[in-house]
Length: 182
Image 1 (cartoon, one colour):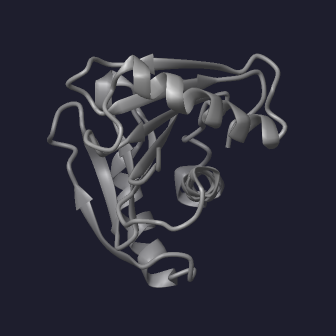
Image 2: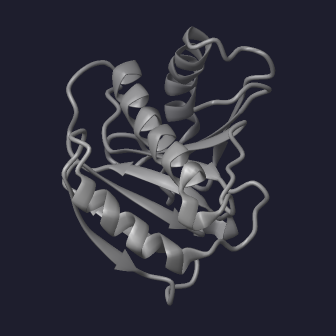
């Protein structure tokens, strides 16, 4: 099964509301800086929408957001365009983009250390119900591959995967471990 349109999220640690308004000029600065990895386009303020993306950094290849989906605040990276390579390479790209954004936010002077992330837990979603329906069969097919990805990066102790949501939801796996996952 080929994984595309991956979406990964790190929960905030501790899970508390962030200074979301401060993210807007920070994300605009990321667009101006243009680090070369991705084409970043715009920033959208969705703080008025309950339980969704709060502040969204829109890119051509993918989006970044601080969101509150399922009442769990966190940093999310959503890959929008098709990416060649293996499932492990695509998972590595998504987690790498998320980790880079996490490091930038945690080091951002304007946030004064207010954003910290729980790096021992990660949510992985596939935003394509046709490609990866949220079923036990999909989980059984992908869980060994996801576990092998993390083990190949030295995360083995306490590695746990669980499928979340119902069959009408996108495929979603929560990964937990004793070591940082990003």
